[in-house]
Length: 455
Image (tube, rainbow, N blue to C red):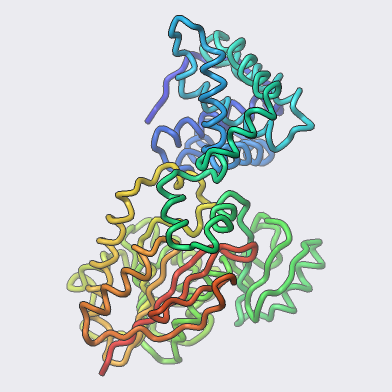
């Protein structure tokens, strides 16, 4: 959705007002239905921004969308008070609303800079609609500061404003995770960790930790391949990244290749492979004959780029894994990784727009697509072979319920037990033996189920 506005007056490119205005454009596009990554890419294409400017815009956009439930709650009350009594709806202007959401986010997270935030937001508002929104923006933001205690108390009493997720999302998580639902929702509002996977063919965790330390990057090892950075870093700052020494991959996602446990010489299929992180990890752990599929030809390019950087080899194809007749050569696979499409509810802190763009009916659509994929892939799995079902979702309809329905429909399928921790830990085993990872400071939320085809 495109939002047309009057010509914008120039703002100093190094000013907070400039960053607020650019972030507002991104936020308005997301609220209008556009994916956040796409909205940011459009902003970068339309405006020549420095790395610092991009960082400021991105921080404001991500932050405002993470807190959208709270910001929208405040804005609904503040605009009612500030708008003219004659029914003037100027506050419904998408770009203005987005600007106010970005400013409200900054007021709450940077209270010491409240005076600067208000002044700069008003300056940004002056660049919208030939200056007609300056007074409204000023009134809304100063009212927010003046009514701080009252508004915070009201927000804390409202589930959507307090948990910063849609009500239907809150209800599903609360129903599925009776002991952990508040912890899960809180994690979804935070900043994601940045973890690395060390290429075992090029070195060890201890060796790479030493290189990070020499580069002034604080980090700690998590296991034999995973490293958690104290702070996120651009990949060009990581020692030897472009030489294939390490990859960026969430620690929870790294469980996929480990649980698949492909053995040397086996024929392996990664059915929904882009951008190739799990494909590469499988190849780092074992010398296998691997086929990587993805529906999108442009995304298969990413797979090939990742493999080249790491010095790994696999056959990569653009194909619909639900239609084996178009890509399968008739030779069965001993291992299949089915990283099926899902709501991505377990990685929402990386994609805060998804909380507000998703609809309850989307979960059923994902579940139907998953059923089609699993049924098709089961045809190409060898007797005695194993298929690892993986999602980055927390919703049972896409996870445990999906696996239960599959094993009930396929008499030759059994769900093998995977190790899981206690209810309050980072892992939760299920009755079927599947594994649900709960979002934590070290990793995102993932689901795994290992299915074996009976001989």
